[in-house]
Amino acid sequence: MNNTPKFNEVKQRFKNADLQGKIEIYTTTQGLTVDQFKELLGMFPIQHLDKLERAMA
Image 1: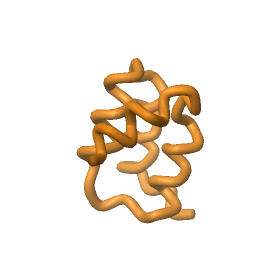
Image 2 (image 1 turned 60 degrees about the horizontal axis):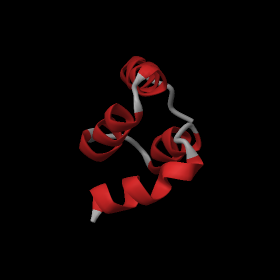
Image 3 (image 1 turned 90 degrees about the vertical axis):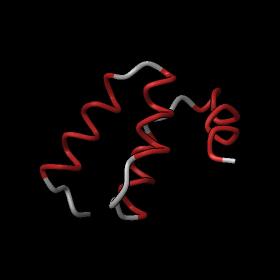
Image 4 (image 1 turned 120 degrees about the vertical axis):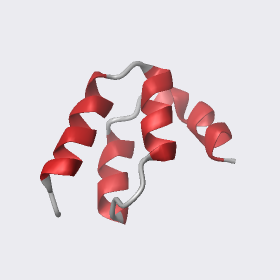
């Protein structure tokens, strides 16, 4: 996986963000690979996946 400094920064912000912040970061960050998005998704609280799905619709 490509852990560029930019992605490491995004990942750290994502980790520290509240639920709404995680949703915003996931839906607005551009230029990440599929694997990087999957890594962020793995850090997302599973019980709130419906909120992420709605935000992406």
